[in-house]
Length: 337
Image (cartoon, rainbow, N blue to C red; front, side, top):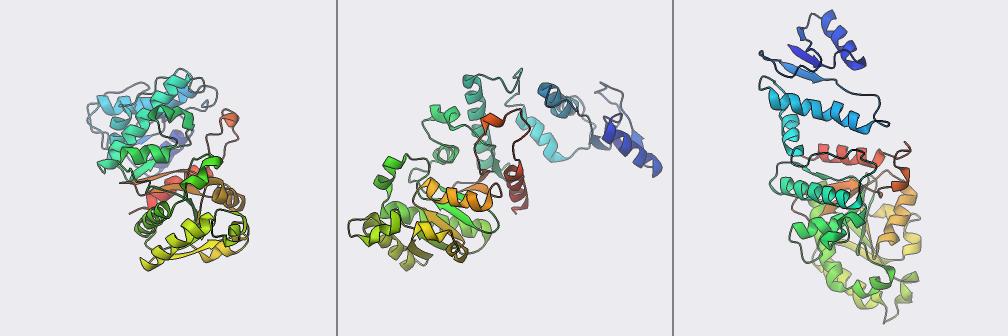
């Protein structure tokens, strides 16, 4: 038997006709009916609203709160285990904003941190495949004294040696910034052989674990034209010695590559290009692939992915945001075995 909630709406009406035409036994609950004496069989939840943009809270209630209420009050529902588990999880962080587009900074920050902490806890206990977080304004988590979500989750996993990896990935190619959210003036101070070796060892291990291949890694220099390999340059003092040691350790690593020509055609020779700083690799990558990419954090105790773009606060409520990267995240996690 099939029970259809929301059977008077567009989807519910058509599903009801489909079942009737095939002599499938159907139960149609009355509006606001939440308790039932009989087993409802397979439940199809079609309650929704077409006013999501104008009345977001009504949409949340229709698409989520009513289902949660039904599950809490009735034990005779044969429903997918994951849905029931989700409702239990989500109760820990109730959505109680009157208008989600007009929430105070303090309330937003508290909500984001609670969500990240809960996601971390569930992933640590292997209750979920991994974490997907939508774009987050980094100012919301500054009270944690960490700069971005990558660093925040690394601290939660007790990673103190900077071995976490920000891998920007699509099916054709990936890039990794050696340093993540640093001001330009501080980058050269952080380019050390020790950090390069640590990051690339972690990258090699994580890439093999997730994608089941040993990556071919290209490493960019820091300075224009690799500073003509001047003996006082970061290339000669830090990058080349690190690459030499990594090769001896068995990694497929090459460089230093000249940054201004690598992304013309040479990038196709590698699975991953590692740059010395954030914009050195993300700018050409996004020019080539736009939103067709996801951000994967390697080196944690679990898998974490997010869309490869910021929160785009200026697009809120305008129906112009691009969902492609978020969709890629969902597909990626779903395909992980």
